[in-house]
Length: 126
Image (cartoon, rainbow, N blue to C red; front, side, top):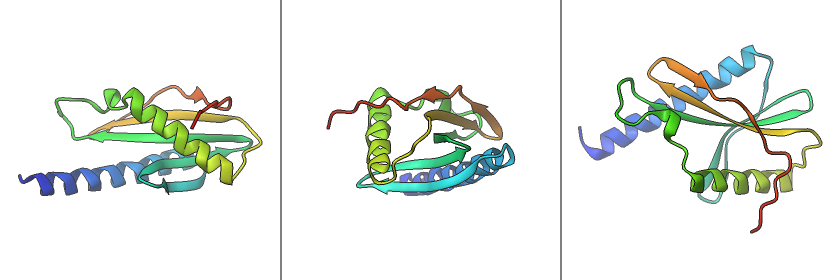
């Protein structure tokens, strides 16, 4: 398979798993705030709320049997970019409640929801 076809297949898989993740969280009582919100080159996959809590979800997907799993796909630099992008969103839309971050990893049909991390004390230096 060519590199461009693999890239397109990965984009389709990512979009599909984001939609499925959104549906799963909606079934648990979460409401969509923003989906694929862009700040320059960076993007927030899903912002959801339930009551006073805002949660940023980073969805990672790999096909079943992939050599590198989605569980390990978030590098420290990516985490820092996510924090900066979230801070840019919060500068535009202040959130009065708790802010948390959660990774959701997909390997084929298998989903793993990592424990949420509190991010309401973001101290990002630009």
